[in-house]
Length: 133
Image (cartoon, rainbow, N blue to C red):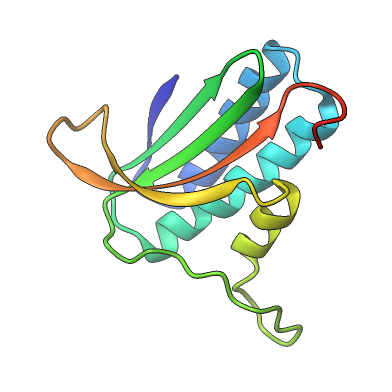
């Protein structure tokens, strides 16, 4: 499933709502839905703040895992930074790394809603089965 997101900060709320609805509909455990909503919120916020429009949200669900990707047209890849307790921002990827148990990354990725445009996708995966996490 792929959605084009708004080109502004409202994309964050839209993405949260989409992820929550889709993952509850496919029967993902509520604690994993909550984790996915938080991680997508962080990734879309980073895309809007540091990436370039357009933005897409991609959710892939199979019998083993759920993969969520946020695609943007920006060239700058995110960097995992150390925890600075005095910083007002910079914790997004740390949150994603922790909640996904290290199953996350950044890859070049084309846009489904803008054929021919290539950007980057920041993604994470969550298991659908108990015990994998």
